[in-house]
Length: 423
Ligand code: SAH
Image 1 (tube, helix red, strand yellow):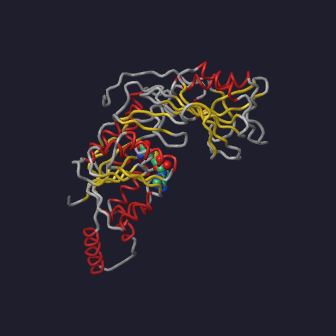
Image 2 (spheres, protein in one colour):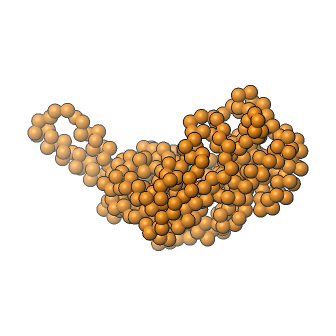
Image 3 (cartoon, rainbow, N blue to C red):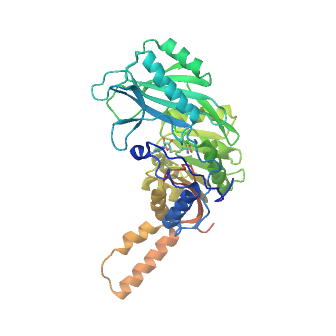
């Protein structure tokens, strides 16, 4: 793991970058990207606590282990696959991407040519006719297992068997193929119905020495190399002694919970997505982790229930989506009073907002806008405020480490350690 010391790597320009809009930094040397991200994190978060240097990648290309392609038909060109032009539903053909796993990209190109030879019609979003809508490929970084999800507009897939056998002949590295049926006029990629047409219906990957089962709909970090670094940092921040009760909120398939379980007394994971929770339970079993329980629930509601039941919680990991956490969650957190909170964030702006809340600043703000008051009233109100702040358990940010999970894009991931004041 190198911090900050990267050779200039001039990425070749991507011909669709302007239309795609996914790589804001495609033509910026990698070292400069890291400097930009470091500056941005410092600008937003320095006021809360110490920001450590960003941890970058030694080889920042082709890191995405999850690849999505949308399929369409173009007159004169036939079947195309690629990406939606930014903020539109126009499909831009893509032959390969600098960020994506190269094998996954090759599989998508093979599906494109097989679709032509099998005369499979692509789905038309306007009329709702046609079959092939999207393809999703997921690659297990450490295991090499590959899952192909064919998203179809209908559950009737003629010549399915031959298609599968031709595809596996071209790519024997594929370990499973799943059909997902999405016949709704929606911009969501995946529909509800699934049928496994080859292999087990999921892949496994190994992270931090544990094996993880990943289903088509479960969230799994897209950059496995940096995820290991991120989790190691998160667990290091938790300073577990083997006795603690730990909550892993927004736990996905249980990756952080199961990484930490060996160093904790008990781990409780909570996650909204049913499939992910099912994977988390299976993952605990596969890894013979006996001290982890997983619940399907809204993380805020679950935390409130824990607080109402006056459960004892020592450490909380929280890894919410880009929108950040909720006041319900954080109010419950403040009631539960864990000694340490490890906040993993993929959006420094919502992280800043939530840190402000946990610092107790919101209360101060609300009380600050009181209008004109005389000197005695002001002193009285300041005394009240001080008392309230002292009574309320507030959290102090001890350290923040940005980890570059998304090279060539302007997305920033950071892990942040908060400690309860007075402990
Ligand atoms: N910690 C996991 C997942 C982080 S992504 C990992 O590192 O892999 C955020 C997760 O929060 C997703 O799995 C998403 O399904 C889940 N999520 C989103 N909103 C939620 C909510 N309100 N309550 C619980 N989980 C939620």
